[in-house]
Length: 479
Image (cartoon, rainbow, N blue to C red; front, side, top):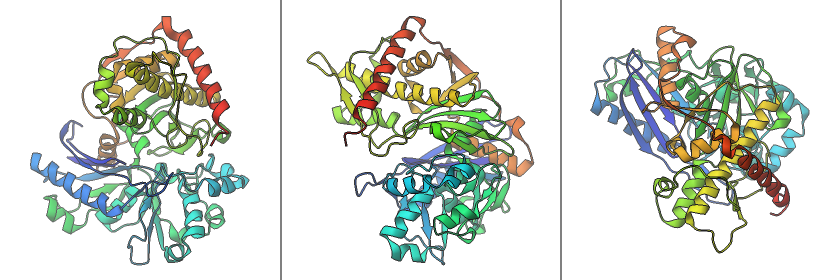
């Protein structure tokens, strides 16, 4: 058997799979981000360890873990976990959706070597600008930094005692030479760091270390359980849904929104604000557009009206043409295609007839338009999407999925019931590390049904998207 641990922003998910890749047990432990200042987002790394312990104990209550051979890791990307010489945490982790380092990111991005070596814009949420921010605003902490780890790699340090990262997650730091799949000494030096501050690198399907004996005994695992390199959450999710070959893609309607396409070549286009990262598998890359608030935007609105998100979306009926109201889902800024940390969300064109259903549809449409922005950015680089699978909690809404299919003009496949996300992909990477298996085991899930675009509404969605883009252009200077 094989365990996958996915360290997310709102919870840690654990799954246990067998040799046939069937899910035997699963568990979740909740997590919460704190926002001590506008634009900030932090978590205490100790809560990740507590969540992992709780989740694995919950697995052991459902099934014996005596046959486990490997653990794979998936995790939220870009977080800056700062450790001293004793590997003690120096401050709360600065998370992926924290935009405090916008000025520092712009300065680094103005240095041409960053785009040249990483293939990406230096976004405010990436790790490197956060370290520059810490150096400027918390110099005492910066002076004590011995090691910088990404969130899942801090979890790995606890699991194995080894400081290791893998390529897909490291690609989101602005320190990795993405073509060469190695740390760049020049980029590290530009931010006051050295290779000594970085963990060693492995591929996601390789062994990164062995589970500590203390944890094996605590959880009832055998000795010698290996821990795979794993992947950043989106790369691991791609392994979970079989998006590992060129032309395959998935759309994720989670806290954030992602349009992810696999590639067998390194083909960056940083100016498009598309992310070009290493995949979690050797000699493979991927491109993705990122929306900072997807299901998070719906959850924000649902909380505002005091109802569960599922309740306000369940009564929408068949897909309708977008209405007059427009929602811009930029609650914490936006990545693709704008790279704009200052923009914020807006409702536009509300009138006396705008009711809760109209506003709910506007929220779903706004995120849908943001996905269309991502699609246009990806395809402008030459990326082709031949097959699209939907994952994430938002994919439970047929209304939302059909809106995306109609806007993009692509059928969207929905897997059979089950979680094929980051934890499942991490478990697959654990299986690869333990057995030597390769990409051939990362097969697509069984598809339950396919949601087709509504040809009658294609023009309406295109017109609404044009209004949406014009609205951003009109508002982006108003802070």
